[in-house]
Length: 308
Image 1 (cartoon, one colour):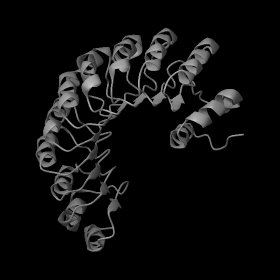
Image 2 (image 1 turned 90 degrees about the vertical axis):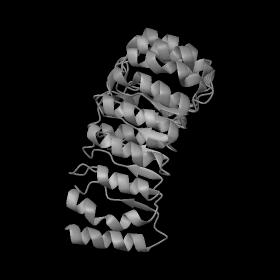
Image 3 (image 1 turned 180 degrees about the vertical axis):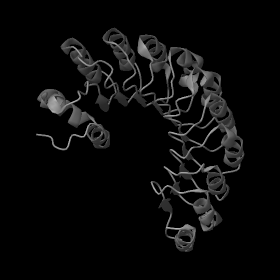
């Protein structure tokens, strides 16, 4: 569509009060097309998704915040630190409860500014995953956000976090409102797992933890399993940390699952091919205890089209 076409679509959607969610993702919207969406900015929405756009989407994002949209997804929209001051201003006067900025160009400076603003915002769900320039520089801002904000879900996958970053903010987890923490694909290693494990038994609200591909070796997993048993966790993902997980460690995780409050538990090392699916006892355990959506994502990621 050209800008005039997008404007017509936006007018049509805005005129129907029964339409609450709109998804413009994967349409490579440019600046002129974002401007053409102006009718959307005249009413609140339950959810708007403008992911994978060519242009920096900061002006569109600000306008949607201003009109009272509750869930915004602006993944891979080339949003960088320069857009954060305007975003912070918009959030503080908004009704947004869920904000996803996955895969943008946000660095530690911008992320810190955003995180520090959350204390005065209604945001409960924040996704900053795949903003790879964050690292340990956001630790202090994370500590402030977790101790003062309403955050319930936080995704920091693939953000270059390490053990030092965890040491900077995990101490406030027990008192925070956080229910879900995703730290996938960060090099946390044994030190990071130990730091996190030490606070797990004290976390009152944390129910879901994901540590997929965090380079956590078997010895560190044994220590972590003991902490999980003492925790209130309901869902744990520790996939793909060790390629050849020993049978002893598999048995230890099964014991952990049986002796803890876990309802969903993913621990199998996922191979590059379908051979792991032939481990029938482990697969039955996975299917019985895993969210099917999580399993679907794992299969799609590896292009497994059939399961025998």
